[in-house]
Length: 611
Image: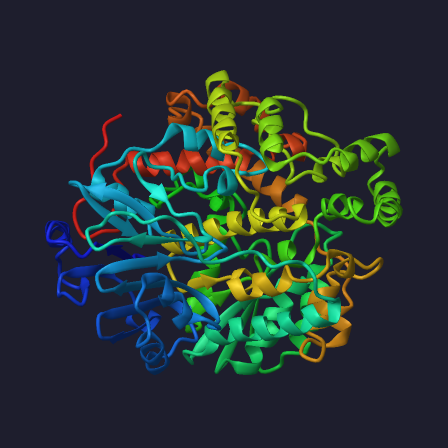
């Protein structure tokens, strides 16, 4: 997927940058002045644009936008920020790019599936939808500090590195903000275009909102006609998408790959769903028919804008897209983001404790028994109501400590990160500095409520991942409807207490899809484990993983101790010990891809980097 775009200010100096990008097949959209505004290569079917007077607007991505409606709405636009009114109510996942009298407005999505990045080329401010495009244009080098943060587990990069990228001198616009340029390219103050909702709706009210938003989101996936495909793991998230897609798609292809764990009942639930979808084409892959996790990772090269932890199942995803592509699929739907949206995090009980302490304590008592957590440790976790700044500073000081116990470790703003056992002291210093720098300006959390902040942080980690996968995988694009902004807003609007009901799994999603997904499928109360697949892949491909430690570029950068990593790579290792492995592998593969001079996404020879 080599789509890319570069945005330029309405100034004479920008012409030289535009000229560097002139190649066959590269599209150009001008400002009202005639000077170059957007330059790049993208699928025309993903673009809806309009112009009126000196106003220009382009919606790039999957959306319900219509050119006529956009044109009527921008007739009244006089300021860049007013361009946002033109896209009010649109469903989908898309960039909004506007030029109003030469002043510019650009934003991506709140979920980070689409981002905006900036840098300067020969003194000219330049923006793009991909950080690696700007890195190639400006000959930027990887940022070791950002790589160190990526090694942390659980991941915190999407919150801690909100305006940083993995490239020196390439900056990111925070997902909730828009980039604003004056006509000469001077950057205006950041404008917040999106805010998380107040979780105030009842389950019934929120279910109605989710039903509409999710139906519209899947509708933007099927609207182009033809064949679409979707995961059908057997879990509630992917099953729901399949039933929504089946109502509108010309043709639906579902894919289920069977796990190796005998306790995993996903296969049985997927079979029941297939029976209820007789008009769809169903692909069922056994463990022998689909690549293992970690297959091919030793020789994997994925030049992209940032490291991706999904190198673990890159071979499996590539095989999946190849198969659905052979069945004519033009877009593949995945249920990623569903867990984050419909399973309130335990930290919502800490928010509740501030207003309804007795109710919170009763719920905590039940949870602590399920998690086998001590009464005293739970009480400390709930009563320690720190600011987000204080949480960042505490996390910076705890990086090398043992992880906190399961339940109490989830009562803060988000699970505290830990450095992997193979991180060097130098890497830990970089991690500590990044967390303390993030805390220095007394930052606001992503939302006032801990549970909403935690959900958004994880959604953005997933958004970053799917963006990178779509840059590197061959075949139809992947879509995550649960991360569409309208769906995120609707799902986070529910009062957490109503979205948690004893004995009911994801009650909000179940209520939203009632009447669309058969009741017997909505009754599922668990999800399948995949530990057996993890260890099977680790055992079979341990040699490939060990090969990545030979001549490791992360080690060369002073970030990991390869001997400690090698000792951790054995199939008897505890899951907790190996949790950070995926981020380390992603960073190593990414650096090797750059070192090999992987293809740049812009139409000129890639920069040759010296080690």
